[in-house]
Image 1: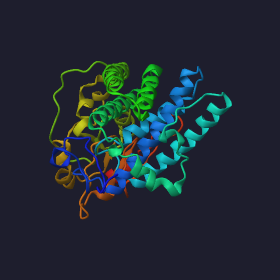
Image 2: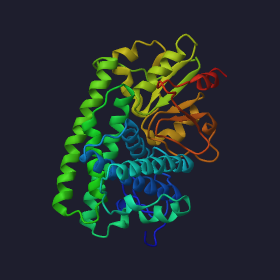
Image 3: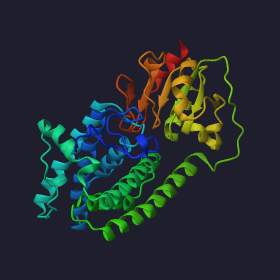
Image 4: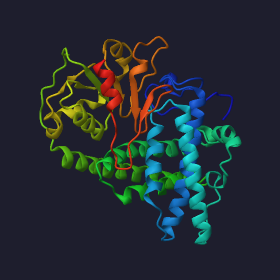
Length: 359
């Protein structure tokens, strides 16, 4: 990975406009960056094998696509700073990869001779493999740029797809493209023409993912309406919910109805107010705060619990008063914060959040 402690250039915050090499401006530490690079390497390996199986007419289960989506989503900017959570995703990916390798062997499917496919997934080799799988593994800057542009498009696509899938809307063509694109960028011999075509296809598939999410949101919650949103606060207990996942705020609103606890949106959750099936809840009382990057100051003055359904998380200062009442869910995570996991039916239990709000 060169002499840099890390290399990440995926967002507008990046140091000097070229890349973070010591610690992310976003707060991401070098170790976290390495584990995310490792995770992306595992993702490419899983996708390459799945793509080869698909081309041979062999179906894989839904777990494969869901894994790719979740893992890609976890590596977007300001989403997950929890090293252990990321390593757990690596472990899960290694398991899935070995299952796919066994299936390919059983079906006599020849696999590409790529590093991501061949790596055995030994835990003792995690650190070294994470260093090998970083952005700078590709020496040619033009080739690297096209590959990484594709990756960034796939990350956004994964975010849209995960939200849509939580509302029971899926599109196997999008998953198939993600596998194909990840297999293409895993190929060390991929040329400019091939990669440029992949970038263009990524854009098209991204639009398809946006359309899928729009369909999911409007079918579940109605067509968006012009809505006036209160930006003040009341005197009742409140919960602050941030991020993009509308299914999460719906479940939170259902579970807080009649409890005397109000719900406030923050940041990217503001659009929840313009969906008819969400704004019908009278205890969805307003939006608190400004842009996501002001949260360290604004969360100090919000006395209730905070739920992150997606990015954007800004790491709190060590003395932050709110750090013990923040929850994450989905692909997000932060060390020390409690993480809410859905059950097999997609239901999430927000009772602990609600009880904290009442105190």
